[in-house]
Image (cartoon, rainbow, N blue to C red):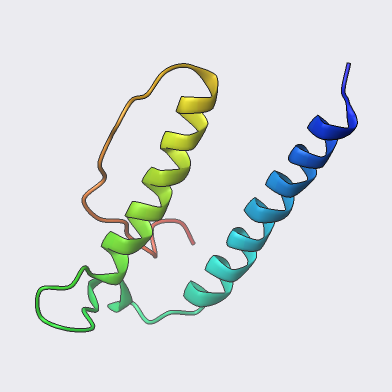
Length: 83
């Protein structure tokens, strides 16, 4: 049985995930082939590493919601793996 509080929380979560998916997709759509290796400054993360980190955060949140805390780290995400 759902309550107004759980419905509200679910709606907020759906909106948040949809917003991140839309904005993230818009940012990397039609990116050049070398974009994943781009670094804004020396010592900063590459675009691929930042994208992998965001994916890790979503993975962690999903696992934490279902079971217990499990931390994993993806080193790099390739933007053009499936086209």
